[in-house]
Image: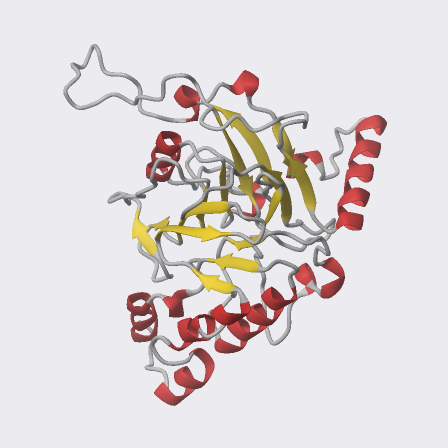
Length: 346
């Protein structure tokens, strides 16, 4: 994805859903990487498939190849060695016990994977823990970004997960420009292949309250796409003091979105072949795929003179940037242009 301040700022929203073995898979080989320069590159987690040290090193090499002076990244549930408690739990559950030397050689010791990224900070690669950060970009704009790697789980020992029945508090401040999470909010590009909603309702409520310019995420590969959402004037979900008869419905896409004013920018259904496609529709999909292949990314712009200029406080651009290779085509990263104001201080 990409962002544009005054003057244009581009932030390349890249959930490089990279699956590494020893070398990158075809999902993101050099011939598939975007060549456009961006002000910021964002990686929404799952830096690896199996959290091995060689995978992290391959990811760092790939990140260095992206043409952006600042690269902001978070972990995902597959990066469990970044989560010390999850790492220890995953090793402890193996029967018979693993050889500690083998674990150290393949996965590292506690903190070793994280150190690889801390050492890369001088090269413009910044690993973000959960919370809010502010960055002054080379073009003078100041970017405020909230990051969180946490996703709901049913108890599996992956990294950065919480039990969905207990929920999670996403402390997104007012005035946040971009929310970058590993997982999606409930009801927004979060359908699994089993047609189940996998997003987090707590995350949805936090984003609906803060109304950032952009919310980018990954995790649910089949949800790839982008949608410019217009919020309804009132997003109050009610409180516990209301009576049963007065209580408002819980905050959700049904109560918070103005769907008639919320265009879908792109989704996988608009690219995949279908037996129900008319020839005109099939040709339109072929043209889109050719355009994506040539640009190596999905491009959308929401500046003042564009077809859909972003209305700050009234709209949020949701982007599922899950990169993944497939038999039909490669799910591309996003390049998004938006406008950010210049500020004197961070």
